Amino acid sequence: MSRRPLDDENPDRLYTVTGGRGDAGDLDLDLVTLVVAEFEPAAGMQSEHVRILELSRRPIAVVELAAELRLPVSVVKILIGDLLDTGRLSLRRPSAPPSGKTRLPDMEILKQVLIGLESL
Amino acid sequence: MDSRVSDPAVRTPLDSTATTGLKIVVVGGFGVGKTSLVGSVSEISPLSTEEIMTQAGVGVDDIGKVRDKRTTTVAFDFGRITIGPEHVLYLFGAPGQERFWFLWDQLFAGSLGAVVLVDTRRLEDSWYAIDRLEHHGMPFVVAVNRFEDRGPSLAQVRDALSLSPDVPLLDCDARQRESCKLVLITLVRHLTRLSEHSP
Image (tube, rainbow over all chains, first blue to last red; front, side):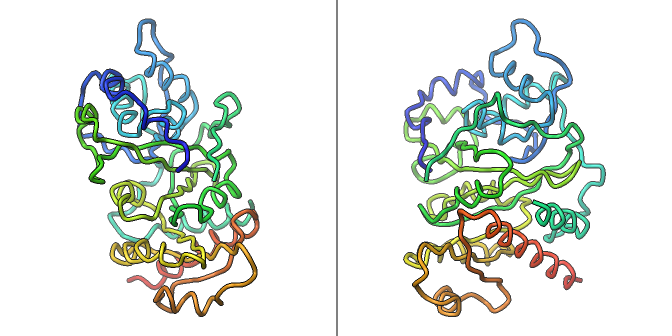
């Protein structure tokens, strides 16, 4: 809570970065949704798009991209949406999708998390 | 509460096999040690990022409104732990105050559970967070970050926070990796128990 550079950010710049668009459409991106680049950046691309593609040569979470770009999460989601639309970026899909809308997490995932934490 | 910004050049990328991000949220009042806890167990230096909010504390669903000068940002820290070839656990430090509730919705959506980090000198800072978690049915454990050996016992803390007996409560030292590991393990065991007992 100590670093707040965007408080001094010019709102017009954020507006320009997203081309004035308001939201990420129907995209259901979570903070921890992982994305990966499908192509290298092309000439003439917006610098933020180039940066996202460079950072996502290996899978990376939406929130990590926001931190690296030093842009608000909602702005980065719009930029990610652009790249998904043009097929330059894709979403990583879990091999086994979570079962339904149950409140509690899957037992198998919990088991793996426990093993992962114990071996830290 | 320093927010270290990692150098992108040295940030370790995820495995190319990673598919799924998981979340655990650490919530607590200002200066209670959320960033320390995240940093103690994270494989990367905690990163800080921002989300836009209006002065009224309402999330911005239209970036066009960012032109409205009354918008501001709220910062939050996070770290990560690689769990296996496919799973990555992200730990978020979330401010506990009521005015940040909009950020909570984003942080808590789909998260495994929460750790409420409390400072016994300012127990009242945790009331809102605990109330909100209970209201949403989000499983949580309470960890007391002991800044000194004195202070109320765990039983007294449980009483002061009106915690139900089935909510795990433990002491921790947010600067110590082993201690923070135990907090997270306690949460995951709690989640496992709840899953086992659910129909």
